[in-house]
Length: 330
Image 1 (cartoon, rainbow, N blue to C red):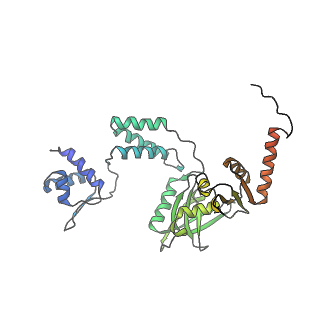
Image 2: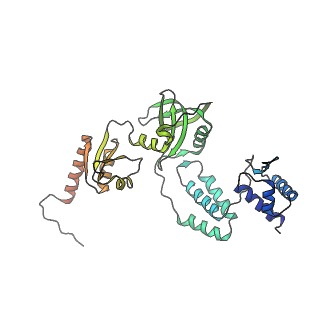
């Protein structure tokens, strides 16, 4: 028979694994009398675990959210998953959580058995993150925005657009999307009567929470990731780049992120059309060359000019056509 302390740990593990347990079923799993189960439930409550009890035909026990964070029981895979997540959070793009993440990771590793501690230590020492790409966002602001999305509460905030122009925005938030480089808030702009994406790092100060709003169907049929990808790629720049790539759509889609360009199949599907904002032509020249596929520039003319200049630089670097190759000293 299990000792009282071992039985409490098993009871806690069962309560964490399922939202609701019928009393007789839980007593049977533990191999104890219902009176013993009730005493163990009372003991967990004394330790700070908010276990709710209900009576009747569907009565039983459930572990509820409490006022404080009690200890959790994690199996090996869960503990390693949390360790990896904390390690990632400590070097990510969300500001203000680096130190808490490291503190939580140290606490977790102190409680790990030796077999898990060695694996977690290997992850910490061997896995190194590159410097984050893109601006960081404040953890508190991110949590406030997510809470407003969940509870359907309006938001008012100061925003600075890509041109540096400030404005006051009043929105009904729908969701938060992370592209891997930047965080975006998708919301219905009540003053403009349209869906908008807002870079969270451009939200200035504190977002003021307003009244509850009636939810509406989101853009792109509720696919916020697709909406952000389209908004980022085809944002209202002065010009749009349109380039025919001589490669199948599936092949290019595997190499070009949805947040970098929009791709469409062309004619016999052996070619595809690339569309993106023409706001960084030099970067676009680089990526077109790096793809190593034949292409045709449809627009804008400035992109053709940049490619021609790049070709001239390449030729100068290789020497003029017709010149004998220069000897290479080894």
